Image (cartoon, rainbow, N blue to C red; front, side):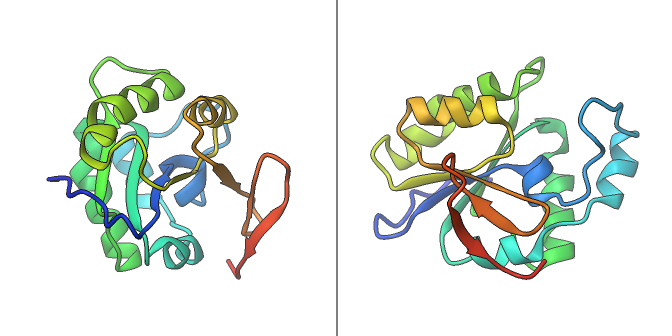
Length: 160
């Protein structure tokens, strides 16, 4: 994808894929099935798509870059929406916070600037800590369809 700088009036949402947009990930710590089967079975939180749709959205994930186009096509096929940009893990990278910090510095900040109106919706607590170092407000999604801040204040509740 060719990144386009965000409209400065809009928020730039850094959207996590696994355990955030994907509603039915395998339990943490389990060995996932083959990627083809996993991708084919993924279900996405449509309520979250509708929440972020009006904003500039960058899908940022630790999933390997070799799966970017198939993942984006699957998201669009199932939700009718595609993020404005996507950043997937470079080959050989495995640590989600390190991957996402690398992608911020290498791909996102050069296009959108370090002072854009970022927020992150992220499942991994260590990645949320990384975003905090950049003063990027961060939320996460619960199974009940609630977005929470680190202080567990309810931000938005929508039907699943």
